Image 1 (spheres, rainbow, N blue to C red):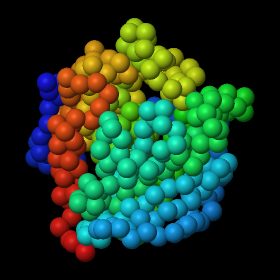
Image 2 (cartoon, helix red, strand yellow):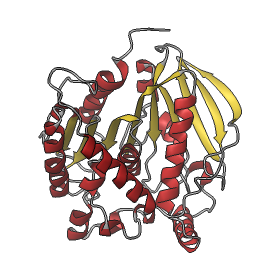
Image 3 (cartoon, rainbow, N blue to C red):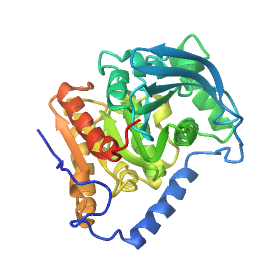
Length: 337
């Protein structure tokens, strides 16, 4: 059952668009700074060393670079860069953000392997010619430093609190710096950057889009979670400890963060039966966002939909995601390499 609206207009100005309110833009910038201020001591002063290319793999239809990136100055970040053989020049760039799912050993490899709840996106990226970057998040993949991944996540959370840091804040710094790297690649058009993720990856996708206007398209799957509704349904246990940012609710609700994406394109698909994402909360966020998009003549650029499903990406969801990729990232540059 659709709860939002979809359409065909682009982010670029057209006859139906209205001037973007400079006052609202200033408000968004102030709130972005406020949001960052809640994410602990961020090492903004760190200057990254050059990326390290471990090896290059040739696959059917694409080249895969296995990299180590210096994103935070604390620990190296293993990464995958997928470069399709057939791509536009410059090509759209996609930041693929892996999920949690208690699968601490998976990390960035989810791009290639997929999971039961979400088929792999690598074939999609190859077919659509999107240069795609995926990194291991703190505590996941090659950054899983304890045999018991859950204990490792909890220990990282506690240690960072002692040091004045916030685990989720450090996660978001990594994604921000990963976006920097993706945008810097010669193969990529920095004006066509998207962020995509499911579950933890979805949360990080809409946070990143809120924090960084370079994200031109936000695609989040199964985690547009309203915080107060999560409390009301007694479902705090459904999310890992990484999810919780000290003092956040004194300043922001989920809708407040998501309005920092307006009027850029935002597709959110969720399951009505998903305990991680209570349905009434999704409706509340939708009802907050759509009037803002409507105000600027961009209502078609916001689509929030609930499906009769649990914590899984349905084929119908994938169909919508592919349509939005085509509309907002792919069909922008006729030049082909």
